[in-house]
Length: 270
Image (cartoon, rainbow, N blue to C red; front, side):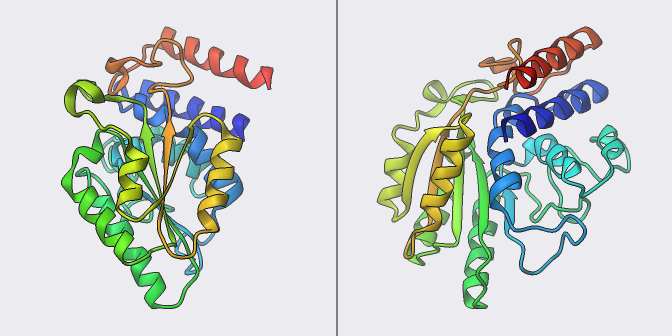
């Protein structure tokens, strides 16, 4: 799973370098999560993205689309060469994920917080229809400043949506500063637990820990689950790691080759 995560990262930096700018930091920080989901946890069929029995992934932090697009392409949902069209005119890979354009995108997300409500709604609908699909929703840490997230948290806890598993990409950096400076989040897991969720906190770059946390979440019979991922924004490339400026930036050709070499070295070390 770690090797697959690095391949996602390599495609992300190539996409963003080709475009000239993009949401680099928050894409790189979730590749380990996406690797666990798409290599080991999800039910899905790349040849039938609308398969009714699939699990759903809601990328509520919709600007992390490049990471999800790379994952989907690597898993066969689309040709790899389509990644070069990221956010260009007439593309099927817009800056923020759009279910009407991209195979494998289950929910359109852009305005932060909206993915929370839609994910809970889908999870409730599945339970009402007697289906055993799961919904996995990914939040940014800055995103959970939004009140809509906490309205959903109250609703999902009350409805005991045990088929809903959420993740907070807790990289501790937002668009223009640290989360502590902008709006301190405190103990995220404890807050969700107070809303009736089963909460865990793990190293978001430890694929085995993420996988085990998801298995624990699946065992819950009467409550939704939240997994807080302690991550590094811009993880995978030393020049972007833990840098506020990595939220949205480009890479020139020299930086691209530097990042790819660093990621390849990591693969070679595994």
